Length: 262
Length: 262
Image 1 (cartoon, rainbow over the protein chains, first blue to last red):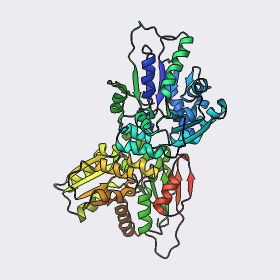
Image 2: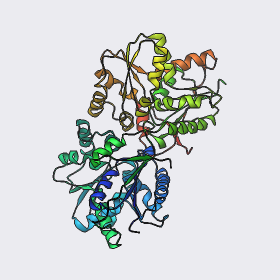
Image 3: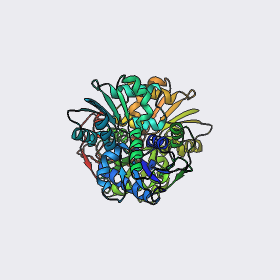
């Protein structure tokens, strides 16, 4: 069990922000990352489409005998996690529940904003989860369909990104915290922080990494520091994308990518 | 034959810019429009994915006994038209060949730019077609992956759209003409014209409408002015999109949409 890799998937390069946090926290775990770039972006697809794609991705990752699967995609978490988690016999972990539990246990927010893809916001999953666990919390939602494509283009710090962030954030009231509800969005974290001063920005990748660390620890699955680092594997379902450039930018290192048809 | 409708498809709302031009030129033709919004955007998908999707779309439209199919999508034209046009027994018309023929017959361009999706530009179809038919033409390409999603968001005239257009156009030399190689891009025509003064902007929708008018005429398929206008039908493969707002904006009228699983 300890030697089995962790599987993760996203529609594209965004999940690498989660991957990066997991590698920092658990450097001796081997990760199999699947970027479903053929189907990018998930954000504007229907619930049923996302469920079908998530099942395909999970079944692909299961071939690697993974011990857990991280849905490193806000849209797939919000639209498909409930449906898929009971179908398979290993832990499937999305970005929403661990984040809400972390907030409940560590924070005293009254007003919280969420930015995410259209599909995530319209599913209302974040708001339902937050309100079911935290009393008297007020939740403000904003769908931001251009941010993930802009991140895939590598425009995260330029004037266009800044104006787009301003436009998407302009209607929020004073917030205690803003959840980055899509795993692409940590790429805009600096730009968002300039716009929303004194608002805590919640990067779900860091929370997922902590969650895995605690839960894999308690299951005695964590790799020991002295063990040899494993070579991770990154698979993409399509070739026509800007993945490598953005991936190099997120990870500050070269990545080796294989293409697969699933 | 005369009474049969014209079929058209696009990945989303962009093909409606072609639809609009056809309706203006041939108001008595009935059109069946298929927006494959479940798979939007096509621009970042592989050639094989686009061929598979185009076949599915064509086969769906054939159920309506259409007399011709317009691929009102730059990406699908550039990636799939050659493969699919020989597979079916009716005319399948893309946006590239009629446009290049129109330029060859009517214009004397030396330097021509093309903006389009990543998939279209990387296929090099426009450049090959232009250079094979027009001597001594110089072709300059630029992939613009954010423009179609921005058009779907309805941002075509605001400061973000203007800066994005500026960014994408900044490296072109002095051009005689710029081809809008994606059917979403006529939505940015005013913004592009402000940026590229004294450059002819080529909207493929107008050329396709002229082409259909001449060719349906010569085949005696055109509807007579006195005939009753038909109610067009618009089908979408997914529900989660901004289609209706943008469609109303393009067509200045309400559209009736049905959802289909294909």
